[in-house]
Image (cartoon, rainbow, N blue to C red; front, top):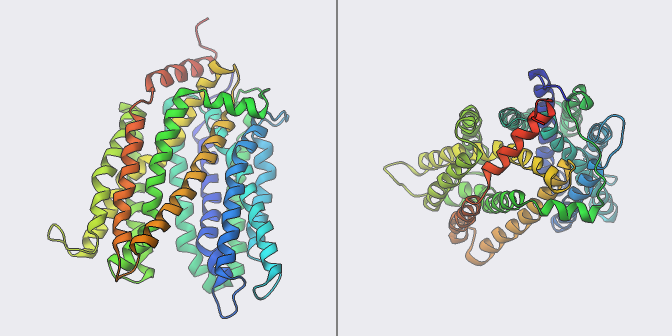
Length: 443
């Protein structure tokens, strides 16, 4: 019989999200700038792009493999703790090494170095994050606790992203680029090791899986609730990724503003999402996962077409004011999509007991990672295709204007798929599993 995770344990677990979200955002924001900008670039842009694609392929393929290893782990520390213990330091070291190339100018040496380090970075990211996410449904077993923990994770993730976007610039000015990397790496490492103070064996009651890799993947995909959730969630993120990629073009092409203004518009969206987290938490507890998810999809279907009119005066508002309003409104439904997927997937993993008689949370998160990362790559290609065919400049902005109309089709499709999500079945199994974990289930 496992014990209930106290609030202190929830905070220690959730705080890790700020660490790895911050470091990953630093890579997204600064790595290309570090290698291709400057009087003497360290790498040609095309070579950098090709290497990053390779890294993302490694990232996607690692998810189910690491999930399988973690589910089958037989360590005395538990199934997840060994990966957090070893993966945390290895991931941070790979992060720092990315920004220490061996040569002062572009050439084969830097290309080989970045190719190896990029593969290591993305693989080690998965080694830590996949077991970390899988630990969530093991530490807390009730729907309310899972929503609370997912909300805390979302809060810390946004704080980590904000620290990367806001804090990196001043640190570069004071400590230099390498000083910024080392100082934030130290903070990230500290945060990533806080979950180790939550003793897995004390709160998580799970035995190692005995399924092979192929059987494990096949059994996971037999879970009907998981298939519906994954299809709906992945389809939504396919569409929303198009909006994320196009945001700098909305600001620079449609609004005619400098690229430095992009962060302010990101702040409008994520700031509203951050403030809406408590509301989402309360709504989910009152009406359930499905209704809040469907309401969020519906809000996006209404809001996203308004992006088409960015740069034009609408509703009596100046273009910039209208853009801030639209992007702030998008933060409301986005808050739900930050919180709910982890909570929903945590509930779905309980159904695995009826399929295989085992608990294999990591494989669910790993399979989701494989599908999401693959589709995000396709989504990125789709966005580039729109820009290439229809234009992405001030003179030819149609490709930029079409992105919200294409995106809303995928968001609508995701919502329609999610209509079939069997919430009653999932919640019933979650409740019975929670009672059994507490030792109060009826015989």
